Amino acid sequence: MTKKKKTVGKTDADVILIGAGIMSATLGVLLKQLEPNLSIEIYERLDIAAAESSDAWNNAGTGHSAFCELNYTPEKKDGTVETKKAVQIAEHFEVSKQFWSYLVTKGLVSDPCNFIRNIPHMSFVWGKKNVDYLKKRYDALTQCDLFSDMQYTEDTELVKTWAPLIMEGRKKNEKVAATKMDLGTDVNFGTLTRDMFNNLKQQPNVNLFFNHEIRDLKKNKDGNWIVKVKDLDSGDKRKRVAKFVFIGAGGGSLPLLEKSDIPEGKGFGGFPVSGQWLKCTNEEIIKKHHAKVYGKAAVGAPPMSVPHLDTRMINGKQALLFGPYAGFSTKFLKNGSFLDLPKSIKFNNIRPMISAGLHNLDLTKYLIEQVRQSPEDRLEALKEYLPTAELKDWELEYAGQRVQVIKKDEKKGGILEFGTEVVNAADGSIAALLGASPGASTAVSIMLDLLNRCFAEDLATDEWQAKIREMIPTYGKALAQDPVLCKETRTRTSKVLKIENTVVA
Image (cartoon, rainbow, N blue to C red; front, top):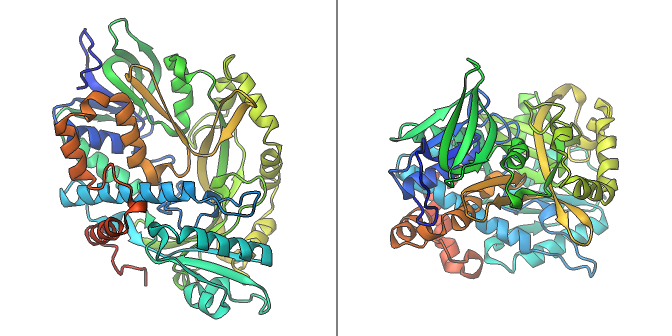
């Protein structure tokens, strides 16, 4: 364990992970590979791993690599397109693929075809202004080697070969444009997460507890953490003591961070956003579409609401989704309480939350409009991407909850963040992950950052450095600046993950 956290007193575990989602699974596997003798306890309030944000029906599942998500490449006031975030996300996804490749080669997860498939990523727009934007985006992104294979076209016939359904019934004189990355993937994070936990719980000194809820967290005088746990089946309560605690409970992370009472957690708030999909029920239509087609979000829409017509592989079967349609609920989790939001409001975060609300009135207006939508309204939104769509071929599916981060800001009082935020104590003894997209796809990079914050001395050792580079060969290198390394890495991971020429047919 880290030399920095010298604690005294008896402990039940070196590490406690709260929440059985992709983040805890990733951190648990990383730590166990780096320090095999580490003792780990994992607590999950539901009866199965990855049942909230990591589940296939609740997660965007794109394999967020910034190939097609237009919200990662905003157009600036001077008309240029900002690519910094897209490049960072693309790099982080390559890191994730390297780690997953390591898991496959070491037999730590099952057949990669169970959790990752090759499905092209497309951006599709219409109207002169949007077409101009997409061309500028393409020109800017292809300056970077991570996006050098991107294709661009305004040829309707070519778009029809890429994704025929989006062109059926469309006006012939309508100006459209599309980009396509054949390297795109679909990732079932639910399956991947459960695979990782199945392996973890077979390791020595690792225990996974379902139907267990964390009721409180308190730092002891000896530097360890006392974690109060309730068994929801039996009603029994007990205390567990650990040297390090990770709060990876999705929407449930904020209330637990508040209970920890660390100074670094003060001032954070959460803004819950719910989502729904339209799920296609017509097998003939599902078979005709083989791509993830992303468009432009409406003004004020949160990133999780970027519309897309999405081919997915769920439980080995091809599915077709459209959405997500945003909504508002005071729950922080799909299986949470309507009191989650009001209970999260504290004296130290009420000002940032009010300020963020006042600065995001367009988001509030958008969510109200989304909540009031009728089935016919949702169909009209679908018809923008699928002109021949009929309501009888689609049904509504609840897509889970996201909690966007609200944080203090000196100038604005509080700002709403669309992304993820790692919050850790100064001594590195506890850390929490807040926020949402593109979390799952970049989980490995997020957890590497956490290791650097909380296990810095261990991470600096020759042993940990060598192991990290075994798991992630490009660790510490920038693929965006090394075209040869980028190509070699993608070739290797595509082979190991079996995503060469595996487009759904």
